[in-house]
Image 1 (cartoon, rainbow, N blue to C red):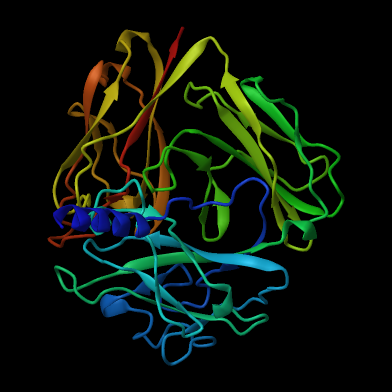
Image 2 (image 1 turned 60 degrees about the vertical axis):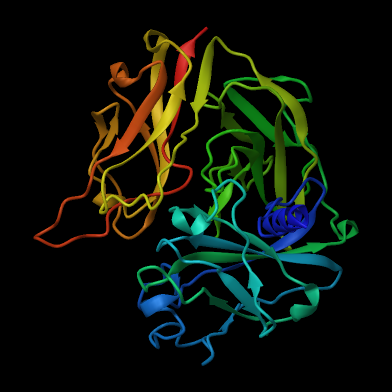
Length: 418
């Protein structure tokens, strides 16, 4: 009986995580993007869900398209002819720790829970995070045309009585029968099994004239800007509905980009693909170029953080995590640290092994991704290194927000010669 309970718990845990999270090669789909441009009180920056500033209880929000019961018009014409499935991507900031169970109701149907990230410890709500959960939406809950609404909620219980998630945007992704796409093509510039050069040209084979844009993406072990703790995946995500942290875009014939691979960590089995956006809005995910490897006279090592603290907000305290560097520091030629934050204007220094390597940068009450060069390489040790943030002091006697360090924490890359 006890074993059955354990098995049932594990199955439920798997169901609560999103295991795929992205389209795959061969898929044909459209992405309908909703942004909170009508949020008067927030200047169109984001949507607050839950607590004292819940968008449903603040009448200043959405004067033009908000229903009295909190359902918001998606505001785009949704095409369902030939549709085979649908999913909703949420640009979600965890915001207040212990905020649980973000869920969405589509067209007043029963609410669907947004899944937890696979790479964040349980409970996800104990850790600062900015990620992109995806929930399957039954097609029969959607309407062809303009009349589609959504409503978000979170649990009302929270340890300091202010549950809150922040939403920067939504992507409603509708998948279609692949036969309706007439602009399928392949990547050129590199072949399966090739070596990637430092400035790698990528293009399309016989591109059609009805292409609006090509978005090139890579599958490899790299920085986890996606915030889900998964380092090996198709790397890209959205901010305010725009793709970022991918290889690059091309919107003019012959749709070529140059991929700077100089900081891609050393590995094999890299893949490159493209999302081809037609003038009609249909997107085709090309078959990948596979088994690519880096061949160069230097090595780039990705140092992944571990022992990430809960509720990493600099107003609360000093916080630290660890990284492991596998090379003798005397061989390191360059090093950089990377992380995503919220309200980084309230940073009070980042320290490596108790030496300050960064002070502060960026806006207040806003998302930012950071890429900082370490000027003094002598601060790095071979083996375990401690990365710490300073505690934000009071401002005019008052506590301020502090910088949030989002999951998976502060990552590092080191470059050294062979």
